[in-house]
Length: 274
Image 1: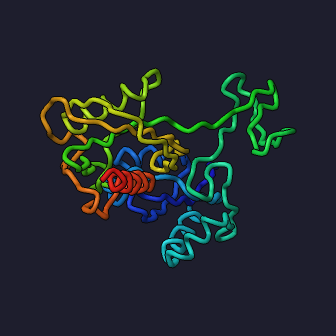
Image 2: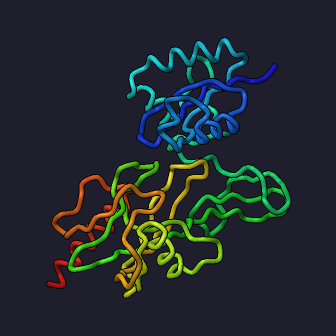
């Protein structure tokens, strides 16, 4: 008989959704494709944050009904602490309690089992292949963006997609595998705003956690200063609007935690230049 799971998803708007399935990976993929449920279709992407294993469908469905009736604070406590629920153990092998993806289980070189160890003279726990000894490092994904400044104002993009639909963001995004950060920043600006820009300097590096897809993990965000040299200002396919903001007019609804810090740093930088 197949094993049944009660699972919990965190949606892009921060709400929780619960369901039952025999295949967690397939079910999460269906939710992120908009085919899982009407509720999650408009709140994508979703992240698997909890799962409990049950012997049959009936037990999983009864647990689901009880889980749905719990106050939100109690649900969050179960997830954060990785606690058992309705007699079932929390499945730490498929998800982590902070909403980030579970560590890789197998070596990408030889397929051997990965073990978490603390090596001599290494302060961090590392995943090491028990068969070939290869260390499996988890690295931040590089992103690049630009603070486009004109007449003392910065150009922001109102997001037209999840996560953070309707919130303001700095033009930027993930780099291609072989893409130089400067080229990537110019490309992202062109795609999101229709503008051609010239980078005038490096503004700074910012690290943030990205838990809005199945991979999760950290991002290394590289921001440049830029000026407009051409193009036609228009929102890209993933944008709802564009607007210019002075340092004392920055909107409250900012998309990502690190972007709020970047804009605060930019406002201080502008003040110092006066």
